[in-house]
Image (cartoon, protein in one colour):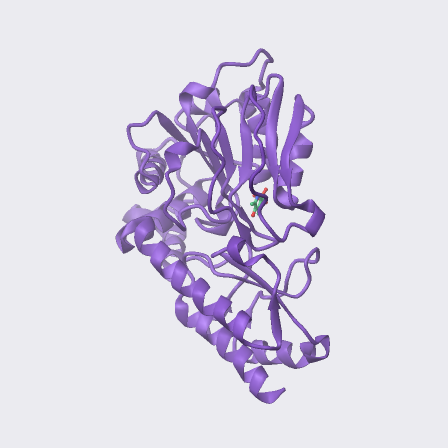
Length: 354
Ligand SMILES: *Cc1c(COP(=O)(O)O)cnc(C)c1O
């Protein structure tokens, strides 16, 4: 039986995408060939890449606004250094809202001065800093829209003259935003778009070419743009599967439609966390993520019982990250509200029993 999969990443994808992707492994487009054995230069695959790139722009509402879409390798972790390599000449600002931002800061320091404009490290990242001052003269300002581990999410993005860069790995395509506020968005595919192995980069072309250092070709956004995201062999299967997920999302009605579902799911779990006296939430209420809900048992003695109950209910992947403890329910786009209801049922069953 299919489990209710709350895993934080890699994670759930639409069931129909799994089916279609597996079919393409056996026979892609009735070609008598697998998607895994055709040339990445063949028309069939070039069409996949082009459709994936244009769907991403369309869903984000960024068509005709000077943006390019790339599907790169090396995960979001490579973007931590690639952004700085390509864009950091003297100093950049970072908003440190979690372990992933912290890692981005560490990489950027290799290339220039890094100003930590704001941080919530003092409270183990359980909130999003607000009311901070952004210095002038930054090469860019970097932020993380959703903090996967801690369950916080930026609701109001900073306003600055500097190009705004955002790691949207765990909430891309989940909510409506004015994406044109950002000069560069990146996201590892494996949280809300596809399998691990590719990273989406959406970049406003006019921010490039402003630094003096030489950039190795594989790490140069300009090179990847000039080659249509096919400078070298792209990760064909992750790109294909991501394209299928983007098609699925478009068919559903795009980001507006999925946002409505995501809000319902988040409301359901957070109201249980609030009302059930056995549980407490981790993230500050106004900063709570619609993608990853972090919570814990008030009485740890109930852990064994609770763990056995959710396993029995066919639930998977709700253990919290080691740096937070407790539980984390990740509710990405493909998760149905029925799965969230199954978890909520177990939580309220526990209350009845305890
Ligand atoms: C998972 C995650 C990453 C790391 O992604 P990789 O593709 O594994 O390098 C970076 N940032 C955020 C916000 C994440 O959730």
